[in-house]
Length: 253
Image (cartoon, rainbow, N blue to C red; front, side, top):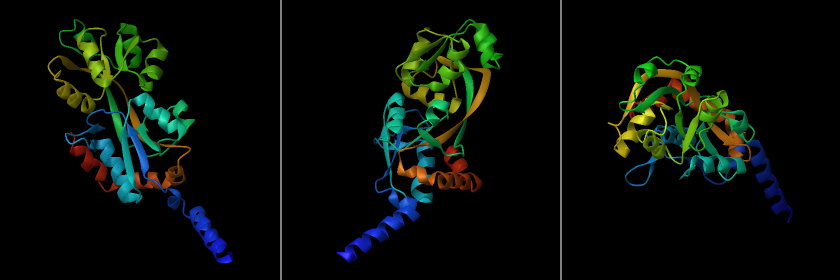
């Protein structure tokens, strides 16, 4: 009996001294399909530059198993908030920081460009847009998707009309149906999504550029992985310095 208690005490000490050992199950990463950042390939396997970066950091740098699931974006956030998923990659907001810890090294800087449907009568005006306030003053209606907090915080809250689709592809189909004027997104995300939907000739990129945002891993405060937040950040910093992230991005450019 005494020997059993001694062994149990040793195990408890190791779990306290080595937080990584407390992660008994695979790290659960959740995302919404959004090519080429996150998607399922032709074999049904997770792929994309976010997936590859997270896989390199978690599996190869931290030495942990990784499990990946695809859900609508609203559910992804709910799973992390409830502690049923460990990890997501997104833009930090005050609301998200209430339930998730920030891994304070970005994995991608998103450029917000203006897209519209072909033959929109105000394309020349869109070329000159350089701020979110100019979108508001021009009275353009933006199409986004449910769960996109960037659109709510940066557009709706300053008075820009925003219409939400139920999915990313639905967002593009609403635009070609002329239910709004523009979509604000990064070309690396839009290109593959349009090609996959067969809409590449019906939506055009303007010269409008309004801002940029950094995307970070965020860990559920209820996850054992939260004890290794700084170690996660160090791994990502090393990946920037040794060219690993640049190499991954090059595969999707």
